[in-house]
Each structure stands twice: as structure tokens, then as C-alpha cells.
Length: 77
Image (cartoon, rainbow, N blue to C red; front, side, top):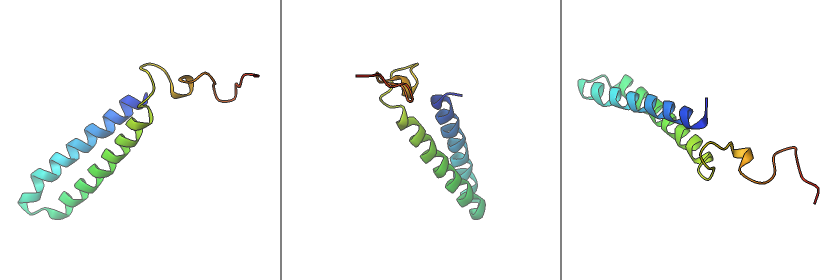
């Protein structure tokens, strides 16, 4: 699974939990509403961290392939 897909899955799951929290909160189920909101925030932060790691990488290029040197394969200069 690519980082983009993982970030999207985490964001979508967090969004669903946020909606659940917003729906059950006004009905007096505050413990579950707070729990789902906290989990949604954690998933959103995780998705943001994963998404920002590949910010400067061109589409379809792994992060270790973006520069002229790969890890463990240094050129002799």
C-alpha cells in the first residue's frame, strides 16, 4: 500500500468517526462521542504526517529515488 493510499484510508476513517461523534454527541452519549472524536483526531494527525512525508516527491517516485543517491548505493566522487 502506498503512502498516499494509507493517508487517504486514515483520513476517511477519521472523517467517519468524526461524523459519528457529531451525531451521537447531542443525544447525550458523551463518553462515546468524546472517544470517537479523540480517535478521529489521532487518525487525522497520522494521515497528515504520512501525507507531508511525500510532499516534495514527484508522482510515482519513491522517496529514496527522488535524489541522485539511493540509500546504501553511494557514488564515488
